[in-house]
Image (tube, rainbow, N blue to C red; front, side):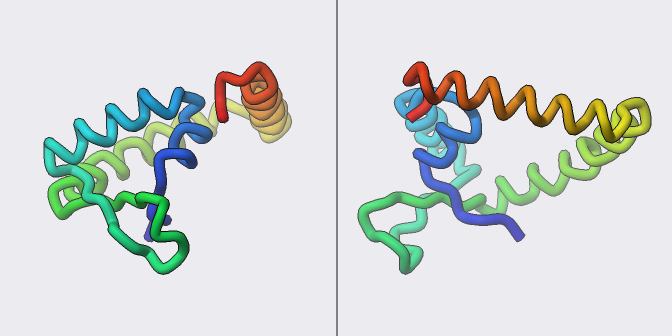
Length: 103
């Protein structure tokens, strides 16, 4: 369905500081929306996270709505504009990485 994520990957994808991501993960664990997976057979030193049943329920509830909104937006954006937008996002991400904002 979706990959188990670790805080380093989340920090890169979200373009956020690792300490911020760690605080958010702690908050989501406290709310019982995610759980830590102790060992996913790759590297036991890395903590991976997965949705709890409650977190999965919320995810499933909002996924169709976000898909519907993306479908509506996609009708107004040409493929050429979408490619240009993606290239711009990648450029911004690379700049942030080069400046040390993303590890």
